[in-house]
Image (cartoon, rainbow, N blue to C red):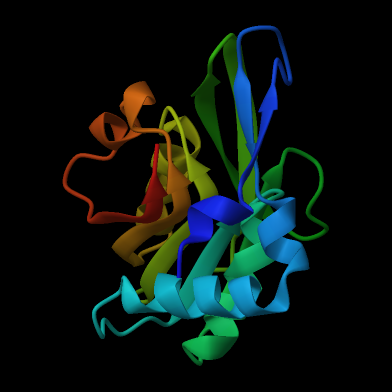
Length: 170
């Protein structure tokens, strides 16, 4: 299926000069949504996955669906102060500064095979921070998996040594 036709380009959002890739048309179409979920699972090439980690907030769209399809658990990663239980945190770089992500201390168990999923791979800072979480908690990153990848931002460069897969590339 051609998923590109379900991605809406929004010029000058969130700021002038940026062409935002809006995935909501894909989310609104049940056939495209189901197909994208299955295609994202196929990117794993039969790897065993115990947990799927999804990043706030758009990683929460497909992350739980992938976890259910893979018979795995889902672990949310959120911005600082949003999770109710004990957490560990990781600083990460944004285009214009830094932010902090958190994960529950019991989200990943030693030896868990983990799929990291987000909607977009841009600069790679968020995914890199989440890889560090997984490894600090004793898990193994089996793949970093994205609905779409903005190749011109070179996000893969912040993920050396990790398998990276994306359904669509811009």
